[in-house]
Length: 346
Image (tube, rainbow, N blue to C red; front, side, top):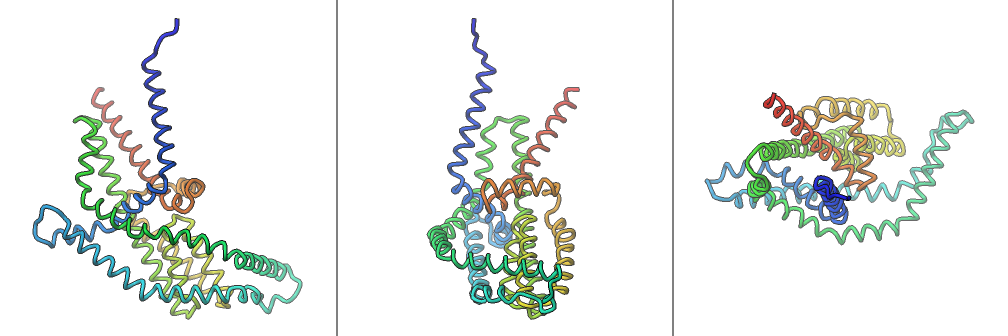
């Protein structure tokens, strides 16, 4: 006679609900990514808002501090966009026009013989020329994609608005999450996890911003001193690629060396500078800024970056490290809670 196993039924329903939740998350992935960007932007603004909140007289809400913080940020963005963005656009336009000609003429005069080095250089030159021609032929298609991206510029307005509400109502939202559980070990565990994740994301976003700013400033100063063409453009690319874990800095270095080689600039001082900068940035500055919140093995970071790229493209690579770090925090907190429970019962 067949019986009804309540435990098996409960497990089946739980698995079904988890799968349904994952499917809903997949369907709403674009909206969730926008909200995630707004949340990370809120963490980036939180120090300024907290500072202004302490300066202003005591109020029941932080609306005044939030409004002043957003005005300051908008003024800074507009100012930097005018001072740097215009030059970046100009240099990008010049590079786009000259790139095919630079690739065609890219052959060292000393490599005119039939040596292996000359054959390798010619092979690289022909491949680069072919790729550039293909890129030029596909520009209309990329233009249509740019138009489709431009239609989503409304997110530039939505993300700050969402960040405003995150900053304004963060304590209330945290209280609602905790109210989902009754007083006890599980509620304390959830409170600890929220606190750890909050500290992690705050450190991570501030560290990324400072690393990006340091990369841009260092590249811009060095390239300007070297009188390297497209200095601000390459510095801006290096700063922005700093937001992509591991692969971003490598891509920036490759881009810098390719453009320098095409422009006829001596590569030796650039290689020495890049190596020294990456050593200081990756092994001194980055560990100090990241703190102890993001302690992930490089193999795990690489796995997360590649897996995130396959799942969600650039967004996946950007979010891979904080997601893995949050999973690590949850695992460590649950493990600590279980060990404490075992010691209490022993």
